[in-house]
Amino acid sequence: MARLVTLLFGLLANFALAQNLVPNPSFEEVLQPMCSFIVPGENISQYVNNWRAPTGGTTDYWTTTPTATGCARNIKNANLMPRTGGTCIGLYVSAINLNNLTNAANIRPYREYAQVRLRQPLVKGKVYYAEFYTSLWERSSLASNNLGMLFTTTPVERNEDVNSRGGIMTYRPQINYTDPLITNGRWYKVSGCFVADDAYQYLTIGNFYSETATTFRVAQRTINGEPYYLIDDVYVGDPESALPAVSLGRDTVLCNQQSISYRFPTVPGVTYRWQDGTTTPTYTVDRTGQYVIRATTSGNQCELLDTVQVQVEPIVRLAADTVFCADEPITIKPLDPTLTNLEWSTGSREPTVQVSQSGVYWIRRLSAQCPSADTLVARAVGCPGAVPNVFTPNGDGINDTFRIPGLGNQPWHMTILNRWGNVVYEADPYPNNWDGGSAPSGVYYFRLNTAQLKRNYTGTITIYRE
Ligand SMILES: [Ca+2]
Image (cartoon, rainbow, N blue to C red; front, top):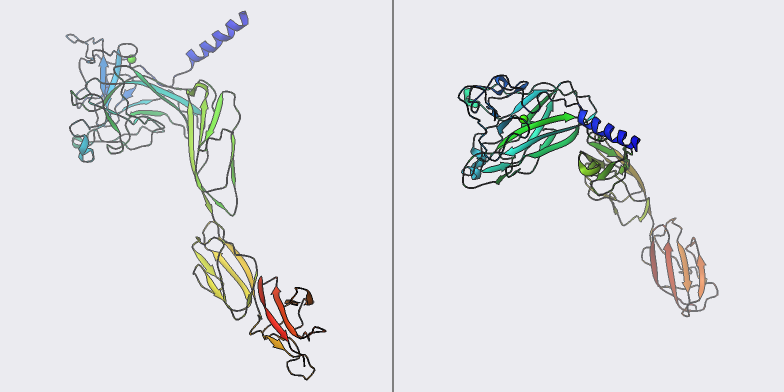
């Protein structure tokens, strides 16, 4: 029992002491007292230790405990106090309101951001957890999505003159809230995990997307304020449980029936989920598509996601070698008729070529990364011409045998049956000189074929003896 208590205490202590890399995370360290909103021309860095506004946007400082003489508390949301302590900050994330919502593309954007230098750079390749709490100001008519946390190696900023104050900084934040966030007077936690793919040391909070790339939702119709969010209690540090840094690498092209296998470690408490619902830590890709891996800690507190585009380049293939009748040209084509960028040994770049002579024909598919080629041997053979329907095996040297013109040297298989279906003659290859043997005069049936051509010639032949 004693041991259990110790262990529990240890866990709690660890969590409580997890280092927050954000200095002054709750905005309580104040540099000078302030009565009301920060006004244009001033900057939050003059009032709140460690934090700055990286654009001309006038990020605001809210306090319930003004110390300047004659100031009352300036936090104007009667139902909302800073989440912790007596201070928080607030920022506009868009210039869109109820009145100009339908004209968003033409509205000059306005944004406010808050930026802080972390206590130390993030470790490249390591997984981090980050969160902040936010609440939509009660005077905002619209809620907005795209409240994000951007981590950078240097302090991103806009050097703005008075005419372009509060412009957009366009980046892809590592953590971004993608639904319009209506908070109903409460504090809401925005959080996420990410892999530090560089030694980031600066955190910037705000909306990094354009007005048209931002989604809005009506929060209240009785006023007309733009989306404005209060921010408090910012945290960046280790996730509560170990999460491997899942990465699918760069988009890739696979040649020639190659595949690519992804393998992640099995970690207690961590589940994997692929775009098709597969939950194994290993996954093999051999088809063109977009692949997504999600790694989630138990309780979904922390999720990592990575996406990769895989393109499988097709290879050109021809059918097997072929035999054809010399007087009947054939068309050869790739097995996959949808392929493009083809070139034939004949010089043709058409999808198909017509062949009338024996030869070795190749095709190749032109591709910078995955060229491919295939070869086909086409052999022209003699085929039956006009088959006679009677012969006269009487030894007079005229029309004494069943001779079929045009057979050439091809090994034809000849079968001759009488009217009762009995085989009276069979030869493979047919020497093209059957004299009727002992068969009496009458009508017979012949069948002439060759396996290579997969073609049957049938008909009747009359033996006429006198
Ligand atoms: Ca606070």
